[in-house]
Picture 1 (tube, rainbow, N blue to C red):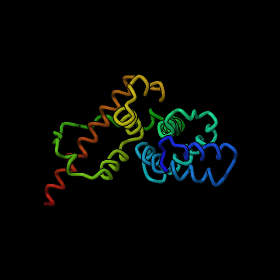
Picture 2 (picture 1 turned 45 degrees about the vertical axis):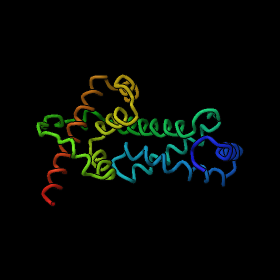
Picture 3 (picture 1 turned 60 degrees about the vertical axis):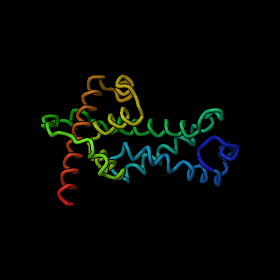
Length: 189
């Protein structure tokens, strides 16, 4: 059984709604891979990602009665996890303090298209996780979740311009990191 809407999934959800602890454990296990996949893009490390998953799953169980069985459960879960990451970031955000002295880097290194072909998904995820928090969340929301800069600005309480700037700086940092990784991989061959 997976997160695609099925009779089995709906049965587990109904049992969860009636307070069945075993069904809740089953639902948590079913949700964990997708939840972790989403949260790792927003977290700085695995521990923070696990914390976001736990926080998000609490929201899932509290809001399960609001889930409509004719909607995609996986899509509903993904939205809760993304919103949990946004909420977490809002609680932790101190944009002005985090970016004092950041922003004057020189991003003139050229990016080679085949750099992405030479790294694993885990290496790419690690590069995204190394971004400063504001860059990481804007990059993930825009590039992965396909939010518009206007939506990102509304969710994070920043201006559209700041969202665009953070995205551009995140891309530049990733391109620089990829170029560095690519050149070091090329030297090892």
